Length: 107
Image 1 (cartoon, helix red, strand yellow):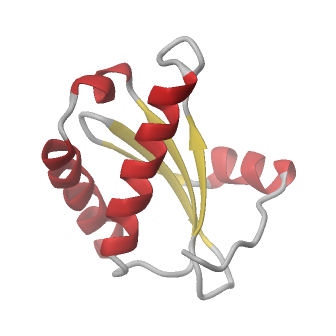
Image 2: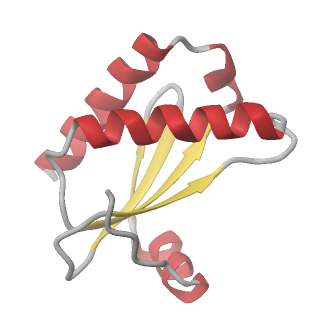
């Protein structure tokens, strides 16, 4: 996740239109296989659901969990969050993301 390659708006629109969707209780993943050997991740957090500090905390937590689980490679991923994520503990979020990443690996 240290290699930063930008996702452009057209690529993000392509992920939304032709990507596969996975939902859990806190996040929604929309993903599409890319030709690279790295993951490119975009966060979609509405401003109405949390203030800037909370949005950044959510992003840091999710990035941390994904970096620890380097079992997936070569995906463009859009991560949308539900408002309930603000109340979730780190352990709950970690369990939830591990379940959804396991589904992603199977696909």
